[in-house]
Image 1 (tube, rainbow, N blue to C red):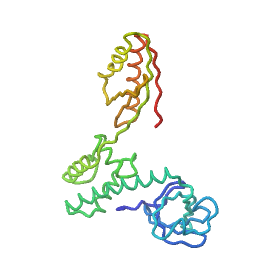
Image 2 (image 1 turned 90 degrees about the vertical axis):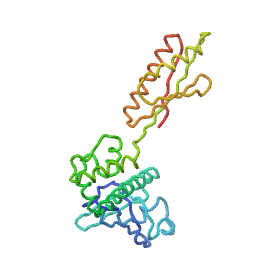
Image 3 (image 1 turned 180 degrees about the vertical axis):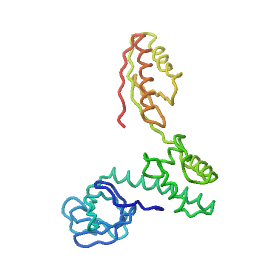
Image 4 (image 1 turned 45 degrees about the horizontal axis):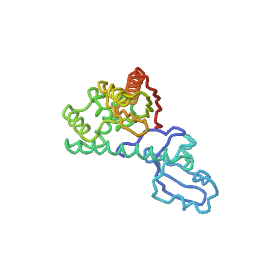
Length: 259
């Protein structure tokens, strides 16, 4: 990574580590995001009895650990490998992967303008709004049109090139939420009523799709760049369909899909 984080991590923080040494009852690891090292006691490597610690870790292996304790006076950092579940591990690795992608964009622009990558990265990090701890989420926000480089101490030509590269390589986030409608009617014209009710959402703003699942069940899906906006659009769509269908004496229920 181009820039190491300053100071110490926080307790309970997840950190990316590289194993540097393995002993009978402990593991030494370098904190890749900080200029620090830590120790994993054998009891924090894996639950249950460990016969051979090298069955779990070896020198050079990249792992995700949780910060247990920090003694700043002695410079000691206690880590845990076993307290990181698979979901947390994947999320941390994905975060690092995205940050490295943002750094590739910076490296490319630095080379283009004869800058040292570390200098350009530092300039960007120093000017990041307080809501952002890392570069990639800020770049992602730029791709969505929510942020800009106006207040950054960077040459205008570099700003323009950065925005161009970001919008080309980082696509806006997509949030997808859905649910199922169950529609029943005993009216001879029931099929027409169902069709008209479902079509009633066609004039609503938003990316709404409806599909037939059989036996009077229909899936409603909304895609948006913002979760709250997706929730609003889905609610409007379901309310409109419900109002329309109930006006023709139809029975309707809705159930949200689990995320």
